[in-house]
Image (cartoon, rainbow, N blue to C red; front, top):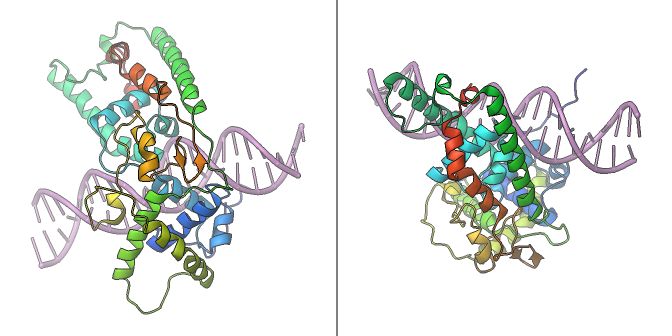
Length: 316
DNA sequence: AACGGCGCCAACCGCGCAGCT
DNA sequence: TAGCTGCGCGGTTGGCGCCGT
């Protein structure tokens, strides 16, 4: 038996996305908003699985994604949230709006897991005062497992409430009647396309279907018009394509960018602002629930709690 | 310079859940 | 209420680039 495949595997392209495919996808989302992923291949001619389209959008093309190395602050947040929530990457990503769950998951698996393991081993092997006491040996615990579980349950409840508060203040997804222009992404996509065109032999040969070509022809003016707006940026020029995405958000939880989004035309699909006539709620006078949560996560109590608690189980 | 090992990260896969009929 | 469909999530994999030998 088993579930049927999510899409027809025949003729579906796999592997890395080309800049042209990215542009087609971005254009589709501009016009229709994120969602209804099933319709994307049929509408655009993209020879991609709907899931692949959604993944590409959420993990790479979606505006507001910060790329590059994680800050110490983000690192601490991830460590503590992982200890609290487990491998709930989507939930953890909800507290780090500029990072995708995939990014966090990758960072955890490739960096933090190893790092914390080393810290743990180091602290045990060397029997020295711990520079990081997150993973103190369970032998030294004065807290019983029952007490620990109760505290964990209490903290999860608190975190859930904070998350609920945070999410309830966010705006819904973009209105399909007022598609949001994802200028930041489109800009980079346009740049990508230009780079890609430079590197593509002018043979007239295309990797795409005719449907896809006609669709991309139709969207070219859209991309150009958005690109020509030249949203102000002080990013360094780079030849690395998407690597030079300008990080428009200077504060993780301060939503600084939201206050300036009108002027710089950066927008986010999942965050409050006002862009291109789309009303997005924000209240600069009231403290962000995420800020509250951040404070809660990082306050002395939490650190003390983590100091005295073993999370070895998370380091599988 | 060539080769192999390793790390990183984008993308894929399978399952679960929620909404709709 | 059961079945179907679409979406989201977490685990895993494949490919590319870097580094050491």
